[in-house]
Length: 577
Image (cartoon, rainbow, N blue to C red; front, top):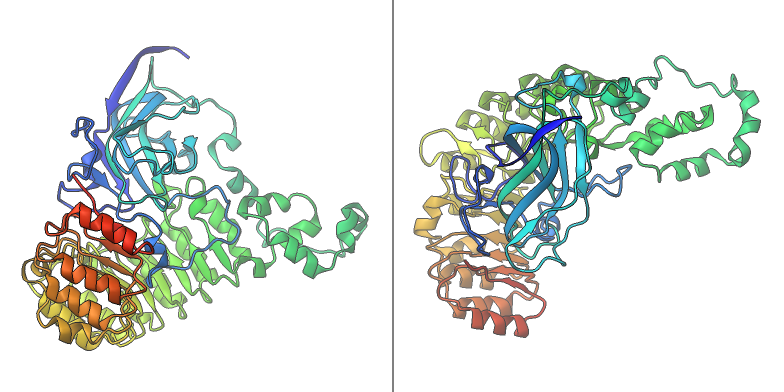
């Protein structure tokens, strides 16, 4: 393979990402900051010019809104929680990568390259992602200094201009921030073509196996295979219950391989009771229409399904997904479709008609959905958990949800653009049946004001978690009548007032007096809070675990150091720039 030169380049475009700290359309803390050269000149600290992930540490996994992990039959080495995809101007065969990390480095756990790029697009069946590097988070090893992370890369034999970074920030002490990503590679002499290795090169192992595994075509009959009992060895003597117990430890790929061993293994691998929970997110690089079709015969008892991150490059079509849901959706309680860009109104129609018992639906970052499409969700009358993070909403859709989804316990409309008149939320919230609401995420919602908080206090007596971070009207006014408001929430465990510049000692004292169950409290950037109210909270809220007083001007680092000694069970954050 000849190559003419080595090129080093920075990303020219951010193609896709799962979350960001900033607001869409802004330049502060957003993924778009990864396009271009480094801006921070090696400075370590919290800077708006960086890309910042939305979460860090264990805190989002321990709060009331935390979702139940779907860990059954997934590989233990899949630990990714977030991702960002970067496009480069020149397709190259990668030989090196530099990830410039300016704050709390060490969250990168996987680097991948795609063979399909803007200058050489492939058909959906030929899209291939290759892992260039994978490893454990390095937070404990990484020093608190600006870092250039450049791991050794696996050699691949095709050119790419699409790189994906995956992150696990659960071990980070604070928000991970990235300055830029530089890709170095060989420029091939011509358009690099993939070597012909047959069908196996273009499709995953899982897909190849599933292609021949549909029960509709291959019936299992122990009687017909009775001669083979002698070939099964000790497995012939084991009761079905013991075999089932053994097979429950196999991950999804291992189960697929087991079907090729013998008819006994095939029988236990296909048992519908084994597929009450199916998490295909770890296999997002390979799961396609063929895989979904092969799984349909086994998932008749399916209750929990995750297809998050799947379908990129056309690997999964909406039609095949809908066919799968029509056959396997009747008993579904959970559907997670985060970052699935192939779903539209048709998917929601299928879910609304075919999943009558659905309790959880995750649609975060599904940008192909239109605002009026969400009206269909009002048919899901048993829905308890709904995630619409970063979607566009209007009052019509919200009011429809309020009428149909009367059992909602967890609602995430963080970073949603509510394209309506001002104070739309204040009109919408009273129309919802919120008496069962446990958690509400309003992160960066523009319409949240003090009136909104009072409405919530009156209508949400069961509230345990409320995120009001970066809500601009509230930033200017604070909470009026804080004692009256927080006396309504004696079960409150988490409240974020991130960048609530007008939040003062009054709100903090009211929370300390009325919310004894408080575990997490964030007042980053609050200008009116002093040592007095925070110390009162630390003494009264004995269950407090997380306290963020970063950029609170009236609380200095020396005071924070004293509190850390005095209250060792509280993780107190004090960021700097």
